[in-house]
Length: 128
Image 1 (cartoon, helix red, strand yellow):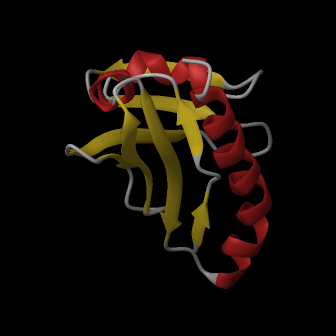
Image 2: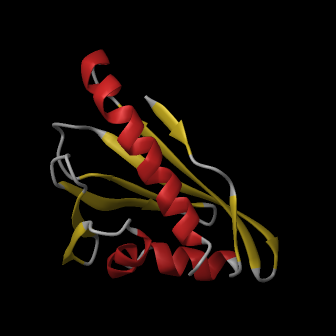
């Protein structure tokens, strides 16, 4: 299952956006309201959305153009990638991409909540 968030403009340089997205505690600012959030280490955090199990996300990869978070558990393998494109010195186009390997039933159940979640993360990124 692939879900692409909207491309949003963040009024920060690409390096500032990467620095923000590689600090786990910063994700609390991006989460929807009423989301359980807990930093578990330098590269991992836990979050819980209403009606869904708690999920641990770990920083998997960081390059000049993207930051990749992945599920810390192999039970629900997925990644959440922030693709970054610097437009100007202080403007970075950012698009979140969710890729998960789910069976058809699970995909049907989680597609709506995950699409909404990726949209909220993208929208909240514009305010950093």
